[in-house]
Each structure stands twice: as C-alpha cells, then as structure tokens.
Image (cartoon, rainbow, N blue to C red):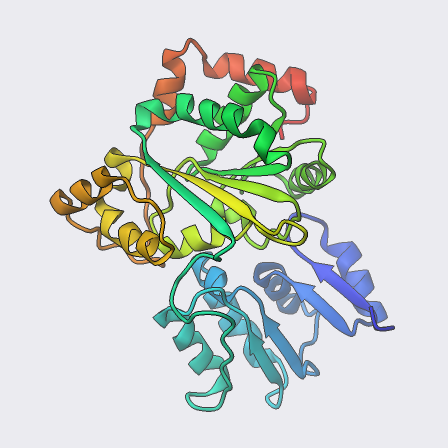
Length: 336
C-alpha cells in the first residue's frame, strides 16, 4: 500500500511467522491489542519509533476489556506521536480514554453526523414483540417472507454462543445455508466462515457481538437481532453492518422479548423514537411496569437463559442430533 510495507498481527496463529516479518521491517502495523502486547512483552516488537497511532473502534476496545493492554502498549510508543481514535459512539468511557491518551484539552474532535446515538437513516428498522418461546418460529417466518426481497447476505445476532451453534444446525436441517461464528471458534475456522460469507457460498451468518466486531462486508441486506443486546450502543453497531458499500438501503428486524428485554424497554423506546421506528404499543406497556436495569455498557452481564435450547428441544431436536448433523455437514474434524 502506497509503496509501504505492512503487516497484520493477531491471535490464534503462530508467533514465528509474524516475528520473522517484523524482523524484516514494517512501516504500517495493524494489530489486535492482545497479540501486540504479547509481541512487545517477548521483545519481538519495538514501538519506540511509532509516531502515528490509530485506535480503531475505541468503544468496542473497551467493550472487550482491552484497556489494560492499551495502557501498557501506548507508553511504549514515541511520546511525540500523533494519535487518532475512531469510535461509532461517544460515551463517557471513550471520552476518558481520549483524555488519557491525548491530554485533557489537547485534541481536535470531528463528528460525522449527529453526536447523539442514532441509527443510519438509510436503515429501515422493524421491531416486534416476540416471546422467547416463539422466536424460532418467528425467525423462520422472517427469513421465508423476506427471502425474495432480501436477495443478499443476512447477519443474525445472538447473545450466546450456544444459541449461535444451535441456530446454525437448525437452519442447516431445513436446507438453509448458514454458519455460526463466535469466540470459541479457532482463527482458521473464523477466517473460513467469513470468506464463505463474503463469497456468497453461505448467505446467512449467525454471530455474537464479539465475533462480528469490525466486520465490513458489502451486500448485507438485513440484520436480524434474534436477541437484543443489553446496551443500545451495541444495537447501533449491529444495525450498522447493513447499508454499506453498494447497498444503499438496509433493513433490521429485531425481536423484543418481554422476558429478556423488559428491563431495557425505556432505553430502546428512546432510541427507536429518534429513528422514527414504528414501536409496538406493548413495549410502552412493558416499560411502564418494568424497572430499568443498572448495568452499564462496560459492566459484566450474563442472561443465563436457555430458552432457545429448551424451545428447540420441544421441536424434537437434541444436541446429539445437532452434533451428528454438524459432522456430516463440515466433516468430523471441522466444527465451524
């Protein structure tokens, strides 16, 4: 690129090849915080000559708990460096990060679009109230009814890795090509899944927030929030996967579950109203009788809900059947 040598380093693969390339010299280094810190800690990578540093998706870096690594990496760079930070949202935690790495009043701030948390105007947002026990049937209806209209790639978001896996097997059992991606997959498996999704061989990607972080794939026509995230910032990130590149207009379809999402009803009402979304009356009723949850975007949270597994088993499917189907589909040694 620009006649400059570049290298990407990330976890899940061997250090040796990355170390060899670093030894030959690199002018542009793209890295995940964890692997970069490990390379520095092994004295494989000297950052003292880094004079231009970019922190991409700063809000997501905090989501993933990368701040301790960043706090150890940044001081290793040249103190006279220029620092740039990109973030789709601007919560207090990201502002504190900017103050920490750039100085309290020593940075220029540029906003593209509104400073408020909003979804892109070219994304049509649809939200329906769906019980956790009816989500599977509703998903099948959405996919079948929108199949002709979509004509492109679809990303389905779940909050649990087990749900991603079970949904993958369920869709495959019905002859629908789909693949699940999450943090328990190996790097090689994730790469293969993303390549198949980009090439159109697998038109439906089932993902957690962790796995989908940073995805920039064109021709994603629809995002389905099978599970709504606890934080509305994550919702904005998810929905932003569509209406990119050549796709001028995108669509998001979200299942609001009274059992799981009632405590966040007020936050979602505020966000949906900004986007002029047609909000079901039932969500307003749920908000009136539900107390808001106190979790912040950066606090730990676990739903611990096995409704997907239970409802799926009621349809006469078992984990053993899932495993056998997966082995037949991918081969006994490839559980993507």
